[in-house]
Length: 79
Image (cartoon, helix red, strand yellow):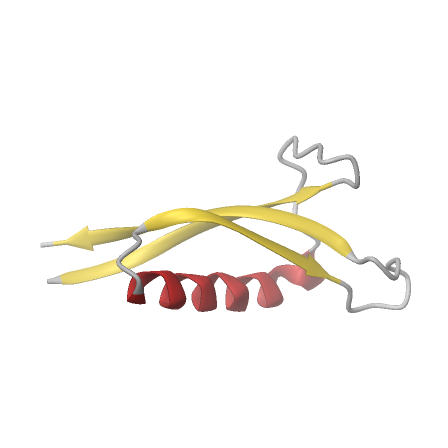
């Protein structure tokens, strides 16, 4: 049996509006690592899909609070 997982992230403003705003290009690697960690943790508990959240602040121009992201992931099983 083989499998993989897919995930999607989108930016969320401080009011919680998540109208599919694009991810900042310089945050992609951080969000990919977060997705991998979340999937590994959840699979150990027998969970195959779910939501995830992250706050990223890695440049001086970003606020102290960072940029908020929401995401969704799921495992794809291949026979």
